[in-house]
Length: 192
Image (tube, rainbow, N blue to C red; front, side):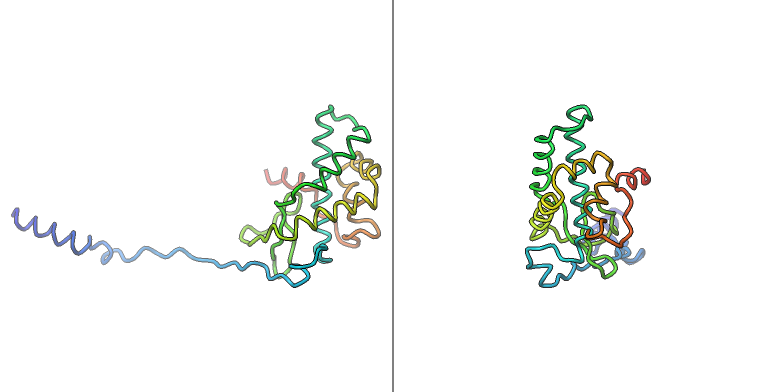
């Protein structure tokens, strides 16, 4: 009996457990392939934000300006900032690194993605870095230069929708004629 048990043990170790034959191989996990967005030469090489992404870019810029001004006001007890303070905050807003933004493809359409923009599908490839941070910074500075610090701060004091309306949805804004997306902070509250 001891010899039979030893033989069985040796054969089991040499030949495997045999469980594969009785149970079959474990099921393969389903795999998905998500390609990176195919960028045109303009999207890859131009120093300017492509026209098709300017509305998203404007909303990202308005969100960042709003966040920076709100934080600065929070430090002074929600009171209005002095002119020198809000000018400094706007400069800092536009000069930040913008690295959390990038482009993804959603249903064949390229969209800018990052903080303050509507959430995209969970399974997508985001192309960030490269020209996108510089383009956002340049566009932010142009909005501040065109509208002026005082007007931007005044609209911020009226609320996030007023600032987005001024920068993005006015007659000549990059989103003119498009429906304004919901306030990202309210969308986050609804998800909770």
